[in-house]
Image (cartoon, rainbow, N blue to C red; front, side, top):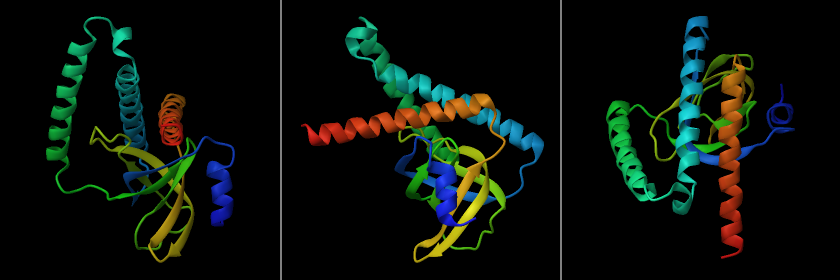
Length: 189
């Protein structure tokens, strides 16, 4: 498939987000047990992330008198989680790079190397700035294109269950909503 065709398949009719995230592609097979375990883990992670991020968006008046205390506890947990996550992650993490993604797939500059269309692997992405947890999603390479900055890949998600697809759509909608709000604040200070 050509890059333009892959773009249309992945982003043509879908809500698309463009952001800079730690992300990468790891080629490899999708063993059925690994695919199921990673899908369940990814769905639970995105649902927990949504719960925390949605509760952060509430105004203190909406939370009641315990709102400030809960915010302090959340902040401490965030710091602790970040510390533990960075210790566990060590030096094995992906660089921050431009990522374009939708609920159907992603496109990113994956570095050097030739990856053929039809190859399978895993998209690794850190979906949150405040939580150094990596999300692994099974993908199939639709297209690749060598360039000056390395090889750009167009990756289609495969084997996502209904729950994980819904959680991913919800996450991308929140990212898009924050992006639009940021542009509005920049336009109307």
